[in-house]
Amino acid sequence: MKSDAPALEARHVSHSYGPRKALEDVSFAVSRGSFCVLLGLNGAGKSTLFSLVTRLFALRQGALIVMGCDLQREPRKALAQLGVVFQSRTLDLDLSVAQNFFYHAALHGIGKAQADARTEKLLSAVQLADRAGEKVRNLSGGQMRRVEIARALLHRPRLLVLDEPTAGLDIGARADILKLVRGLIASEGMSVLWATHLTDEVFETDDVIVLHKGILRATGSATELLRQTGAADIREAFVTLIGEKEALA
Amino acid sequence: MSFAAYAICLKGIIWREGLRFLHQRERFVSALVRPLVWLFIFAAGFRQVLGISIIPPYETYVLYEVYITPGLLAMIQLFNGMQSSLSMVYDREMGNMRVLLLSPFPRWFLLLGKLIAGTLVSVLQCYAYLAIAYLWEIEPPPLGYLTVLPAFLLVGLMLGSLGMLLSSLIRQLENFAGVMNFVIFPMFFASSALYPLWRVQEGSPWLYYVCQINPFTHAVELIRFALYMQFNPLAFAVVSGCTIVFMLAAIVAYDPSRGLMALRGAPGAAA
Image (cartoon, rainbow over all chains, first blue to last red; front, side):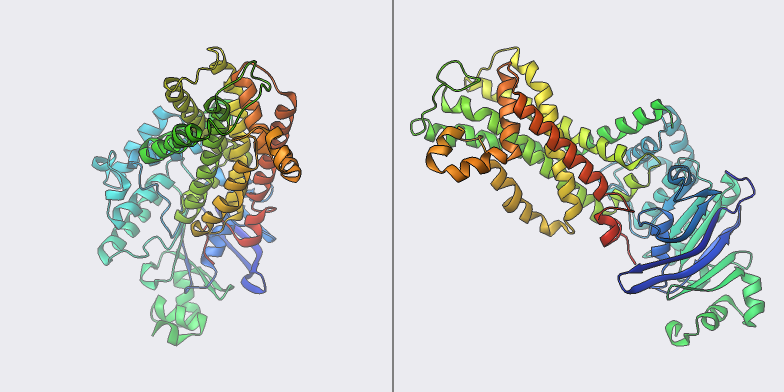
């Protein structure tokens, strides 16, 4: 694993569903230790990209490199570096929070003692330590999201990828989740790829990748995008870059 | 990944499957009720109609209840294999399958872990059935309870692999009823589970050949012979061969770059 390699690098990635192209020659890099926002409307190809990065879809064109490990050549090494939070819920509702963590730990070859200690620490970090024994089914949507984020960190990944993690949450829960993940970058020392269609989730210090209809429209820091487009804010910059004002009207 | 890490992963998969089984008590009860209904009602009714001549592994005339017991044990495992398949389709729809497939362990190992877990659950069900059947005076030799264990494991793996393969073909939970009609019933009825094959041959020669090529027939015979401390090499060869073929096909089907998942998109992923 190269120590100077980006956290995630996409090289000329394309993907199609039959005749429909979902991604077309997409290349970008997520720097280590950065909070990178993958910004795009619904149907931009964000979830397809996530499915390729997580190896749920087979990569047929291009290359994806996670922390210096080629996903095609070294899939297991690459997956071990990844923490993933999908748009749809992946928790087992019939198990308790702690049992979900234990199962995830086992799937990464982590023993019970280590898993227990890590579970306790992570649940404290997401302020759910007192709900460890509770069935996931009994948690609210926001709490489930926090549990999923904490669980994704159990095996100490170097890159956390989140696909629309605030979808379906109210304003308060959204802000909590965003603050939580930004805090984790500092405490866990990891890189984050955050996919969203909500421009208010982008901070000026963030890196941004703009994806639209499967095509990469821009990449750079939020400040650079503002300068490049001459926009007053990220929302305006995004509209200019994708050229669809009505989409955000 | 070390050997210990593999062992932890396997233990975790088995633990989760066991927990899920315990949470679904009705699944355990229905898995037992089904064969017991056949034993208590169907077999009682057919006892006088169907005469069973002395055929291996039996050394004397046996009651019809005794004859169909291995078939009903295999039926438990058949339903359990399909139930595992159903739970994989459910996991795929609910998104839980992604957690499994994101593990850095090889995919074949993860699927094998699921298979072993499902097989162990089916073995528990089989022994629970045998305990109840004992009260119904179905008493195989005491050592038979031990010698049948490898047969249970092998048959469980074969039917579990078949279920796993089917789960890769089924796109939605709603399509699962088709499995009942096109897989479970034909496999069960076109076998030696309910009637000896010489009886079938007398009635319909072509059905006899269908029964002969049905792997479920050999699963039943493997259990029947093992329960009476005998080894049936043909049944063993067929069940072992089918286990390998079904398992390899399921592993290929779940491979993102080669299998059916690749053709239709990954488990539950959105565009």
